[in-house]
Amino acid sequence: MRLGFPQSDLGRQDVYKFATRQNTPHRLGGQPAQQSATAARFRSRTSLTVETAEGDRITISLNADARLATTSRIGLSHSEQTDHASSSTSARVSVQGELSEAELGDITKLIDALGTTTNSQSNGTSGLDNLEKSLSGLDTIAQFQLSHRQTIEVGAVFSVAA
Image 1 (tube, rainbow, N blue to C red):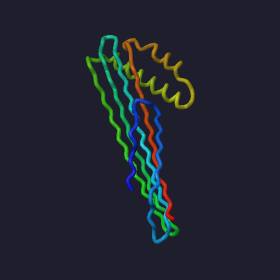
Image 2: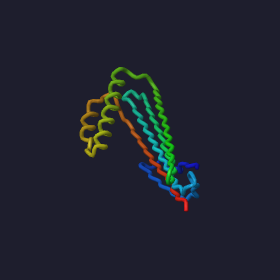
Image 3: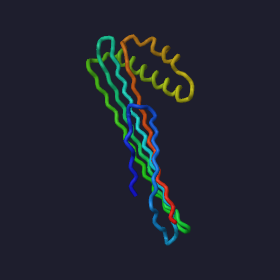
């Protein structure tokens, strides 16, 4: 049984897809069998671009991809289950210009502040007030842009022998 992942639009956040289809099951050990297959794919893309007051540009890109799949067959006297999992991550850093120690320090503080804000929002509280306070002392940073996209895809196939 082959279970694929549907195409998704990475331009949207939190895209959920669910697909079902009937499949003709086989008998397992001479008994009627129930078959199922489920799969999920989680993708995350984050990019942070920082421009310093001196005109240097830093881009940090993080990508993560995880796939989970389970197939199972259940008969009256026998059952089987197979699980598969895979994941990959990548990080890329691009620097245009020469960064001073002060700029590196402010970029580190910015990344820490963004991480704290993201964690606060995941916990149901607004971290934007704290972010504004954290950014107030970062004099070497002229501007920054943060982009985050997350995609979740889920698929399932179920069938029962007659």
